[in-house]
Image 1 (cartoon, rainbow, N blue to C red):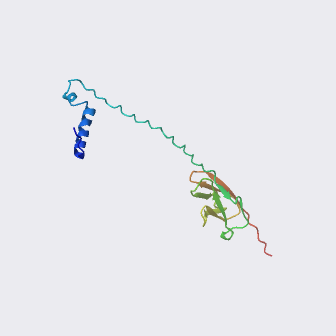
Image 2 (image 1 turned 90 degrees about the horizontal axis):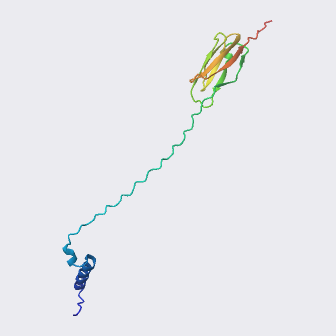
Image 3 (image 1 turned 180 degrees about the horizontal axis):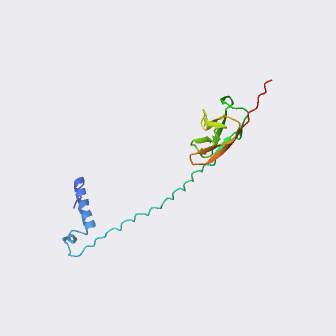
Length: 154
């Protein structure tokens, strides 16, 4: 028998030979009535996520008590021409302050032209305090003394 060198013939021969080798031959394909087993693949388990620890929050800084400067205030005369100012600061606090004279017959107090400053006007001789508070009711006081220097006319 002579081999043909036709590429289509050779390809058909390899396909037929491959079917016999892989399938075990044509007679084995007729069926034997046996049972087939099905293998179910085992699913890959989903990895359990590792919890990420939450960062510990930093505590909110607590404001300190307010500080007034200068303190004390001393006046040697009365009237708006002798006004003095003081400034209030407080660590870890960005709010506003209130200031109230404990004796308006000695001095009055009003907000100044700059933030957290107050203008004090001497009214008459005496001593008093000015109570300064923040919105959290933390407070300080400013001690005030007003003396009137007598003027001697000769």
